[in-house]
Image (cartoon, rainbow, N blue to C red; front, side):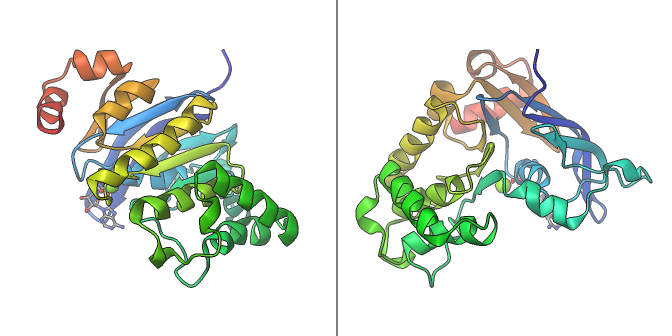
Length: 254
Ligand code: ADP
Ligand code: MG
């Protein structure tokens, strides 16, 4: 069996005295979609941020696509990465945030072109052409010249997805991509994510959209209090959860 695209082993992370990740293990295979569920404060965002190097782990390690991105604080220099290597690895991981995080002073097209030009040193003309293709893919070809504030939340989030794709990532991370949206705009964003899933993009999606999890996830992970409590197929975790905490959570969101 091939090595997983994402391999998280015994990851611990504290903020001061607060231990937020208490030994998390997670494996994601290439081409698979993992949906992470769990109550607010359970450590879901922190887990995504450690995978993307936005937070350093205190203990344990993480590898993405064969490259170690985690590190051990306890003196094991082997796993410590230098800032340059971290930046390089991060360009291969796309991150889509709850609040879109588009650059407000740049047009839609410029938002997408920025990273491939600055991080990957792509010629601007080539990056612009690719960006137009991506905008078409997320159904926003006609919005290239608009500014983010002229778009709906759903459109902004689709731009954010196109921007993440512009780096041709090996892995896409979504942190509650639809939870800041009005209900009627959720579907258009989930449809774009579903398309990506069907094209075999490897992704980890933190969301409370159970219908999406059921339809798209290969694996559903339930986190609570800094630990993975339960993981398995959508049928197992959503329809026949083994743990009381999973059942209690699902009864609130379903
Ligand atoms: P979730 O995404 O599941 O809601 P988070 O990973 O955002 O959970 O947060 C888990 C816990 O860590 C929360 O108690 C949160 O307040 C705390 N936390 C997250 N980031 C920081 C930080 N940078 N500094 C201090 N505490 C943090
Ligand atoms: Mg969160």
